[in-house]
Length: 164
Image 1 (cartoon, rainbow, N blue to C red):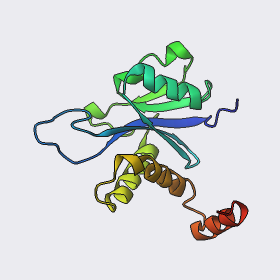
Image 2 (cartoon, helix red, strand yellow):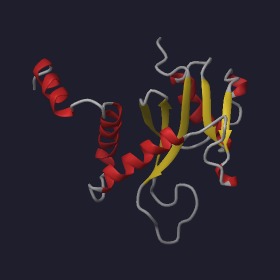
Image 3 (cartoon, rainbow, N blue to C red):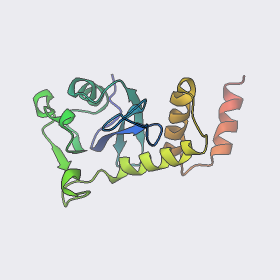
Image 4 (cartoon, rainbow, N blue to C red):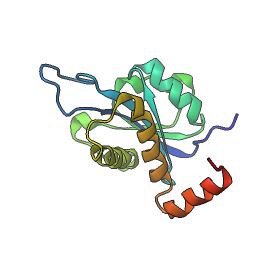
């Protein structure tokens, strides 16, 4: 099996959903979807909807997508604790709780830029249905990964190759 991400990667999770649900507070307030992402320094991103931000869930995604020799940049979320135990010796943390967003060793600004891009793009759709959320999110991933290409030309080529 070929692991798609190696070298320096950034990992982070984000919540997608309504801005505020009355009476709900904290992580995942209300009916927000949890999305986990991996960003490679070359500008490629992989995203996956996950059921929780527990250690077991996040580490399974990382272990399945990131080579063990990689340098992993992450934030201070406790779900990342124990990466050393599964073989990721090179990892650097950015402590958002201490108002640190980049250090001389680490930054997760690449994956954060994807979250910003995806949320701005999905905001245009006003209330995305749960059934279509995954497809729209994967479209954001595709557009982000191919942002330097002519998308219209690429889609025409794909339609010619795989006609409907």
